[in-house]
Image (cartoon, rainbow, N blue to C red):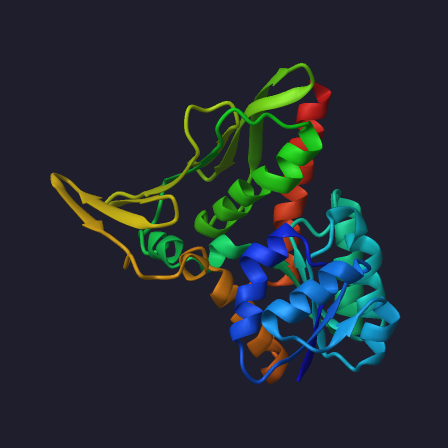
Length: 301
């Protein structure tokens, strides 16, 4: 099976190329306009199917494609691939606004093709353990960075979207209301907090990009137990006075711990077996719609 890879930037190099290089039974075809980068990747991983144009890549007969290019280019690339009946995996976000993401999702449905968005936390083993909490009443997800404020678009669509998607994954209730606030300094977002309300239950998403440390914490609280995961790794299960810490194997690869390997495999297996991946286009679109609502609310301020 032939699978394309478009874009060979830093994220692709760190999170995806090591996985592609280890996969068997897949013929990868790489495309970027940067010929120097193309040859560098080919030499490092011994990939031989290298393309300097999308037309050449499409004509190679690929079944699906991973899109790792800059977000600004996603809409045109994803549309072209879908129109050529090619299944698509695209890094989050699909685009920088809900409407264009919705149109691409509708196009994928019309063509009967997969449009999968790269929300790796849905595949992280530690986060899957959080879903075991029965009847959760409160979910809190934090993703904080050290002194790294960003403009609103970058803040929401590039990073806060992870918090929002993790909540939609862990909070199994229809969202009835949203409350959002943020702190700005010189047109840069220092922190934002969003509350999702549903049937008397609450999910809270926090991102502080003016924090003393970089950290990620996810908590799911129910009447019988609370589960907490720190930095997508160690899990703490609390029941009354009892607290159990479950540490992940120190030898477990980081890309497995963060869900990247499982996510890539899910897309590949979906192509092979003609099924939908765990992250459906509809699931991803819900996250994009919520991010658009957060953008709209904060732009009012």
